Length: 62
Image (cartoon, rainbow, N blue to C red; front, top):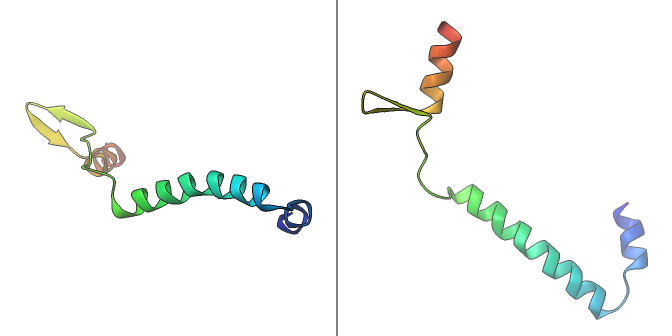
């Protein structure tokens, strides 16, 4: 499939379009890899935050 795209893509405009499409995906992936912020709690009970991992463990043991 990639070879078919390479065969049909000619000229600098086509390469510019592919570049403009691929850059946001690359930046999004790097941001996800580096940890894009603090983790939100899955729930708050009596003022205490519960992580999603703790919720999964409690649900599995129920």
